[in-house]
Length: 146
Image (cartoon, rainbow, N blue to C red; front, side, top):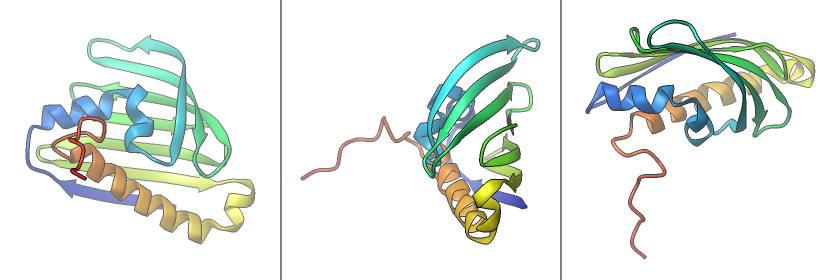
């Protein structure tokens, strides 16, 4: 299954890239990821790093992921290699837009409900992009009155 989404935003692309490339904050923006445990880091050159991690998902299960950030292209590539799905997610800041390309294949029981899972992934992806491009990140937002 392929998912492609794009969100236009106002504001500083560097601030959006800062939120996107902060791997430890993935659960804050991508609510389908309940937690992320970093297993190791490897520098791949100036401004390029790969983080190996273990994800726990909000919908159950967990898996291994390799996340590569590239400052020069403002691209974050996540390769999911085990768990309820496998595939690659590429998110990039292009001017004042945030774009994502997902190629995901479901495994196990998730394969049986792939049409529901596809809609859920698409909706979750769009909401994550909206959170990432907000002028204030969720933890920096002012509390609402009352």
